[in-house]
Length: 280
Image (cartoon, rainbow, N blue to C red; front, side, top):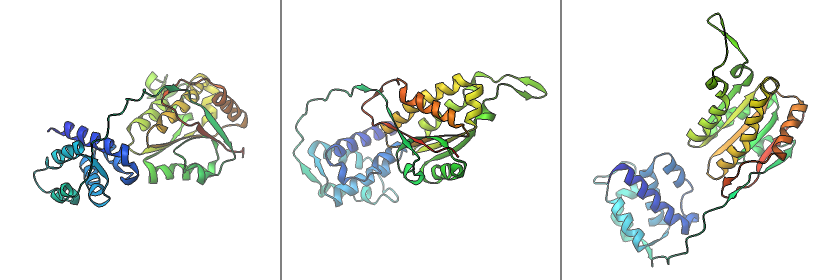
């Protein structure tokens, strides 16, 4: 089988077994496959089948044999794959699971937010997603460092510099291009889509952007709950922080978030947490 077929079949087998016995499988399996480490995921699955006696149907065992023996030689570091004869001989085979009615596809649901006033920063970092409104200066560095070191990507963007009305380039007054004007939402979407584990983005200079580019700023605020709600459907962590803003602007942002009608996303998602910090 080619590489794409191999990856698809590993993912399908893991999904089928996880549906019955997710509590006995490593929580990292889905992370491995998302990262393209399908052989590592297969090795972890084989380990669980051998040592934890995770149940597997006869049809699944046939598929497992086909995938395991796709490797013609020993795979360095993959002890369970290399011990495939013992794995196959020790399987906890159950009768094929009865066919089940195909569930209705999940209905689209609206996005809501819940505002937490004066939050504890350390506790907010333990949530999967979050929007931080008026993050205080003392937390700028801890916010970025947390996502850089522990999650995936930590980025600080100064909106006053990336979204100017006009600026001088090579001695001439330059009007920003459409791409330059859309830099911030594109950066957020890029990290959201491209980071394996997730990320955190600190948006500095929000007051200036809100004042000079109100339409763009409002569009971004309206999109943030959708972005974070979508992340909640997966396993990634994703936080966005707005900083350098007045109390009046923070109030307007909170009002927009709580009163806006957001586009629905596929499947039920919990409310997106919004952390409102007290004015300094």
